[in-house]
Image (cartoon, rainbow, N blue to C red):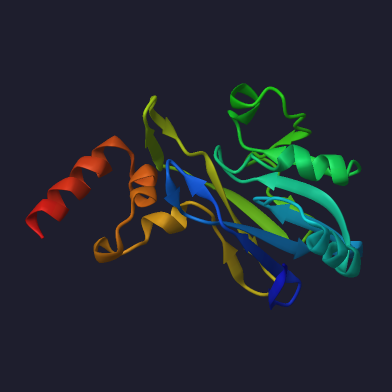
Length: 185
């Protein structure tokens, strides 16, 4: 269910398991000009969310802000075929089955005048198949002065609250630094 958090911004959360851990997922929805909606990190669509979208606008932009937030892109596109899918560099290779309309890049930094985006460089993921860049874009909604992030938020956790997903954002070196910190703690 969508929950309004500021002027023209909503979020919806759902349970989600990754590598056996309950980490949850969150979708952010921004109302742009002419009632166009930008959906960042789409979650599983249900009838309640579809009805809420009808009340607030038309889904025109479906955004995968990093290499991990792609699971429900196709579901959204099937329900909103007029919408364009925007994704980070590398997602076409990772998910060739998804029809991506535009790659997010630093040359074009705006969705209309209400939403800017920037590449947040330097974060890597450490998974069983190795280390790779996260390629995460962050978003700024100027009207409400809201910064919208996805997985980099996991890195901000305190060590006392450490969960495995935080390690994924720090990369291989960060993993060993955390092990060292925890063992000394």
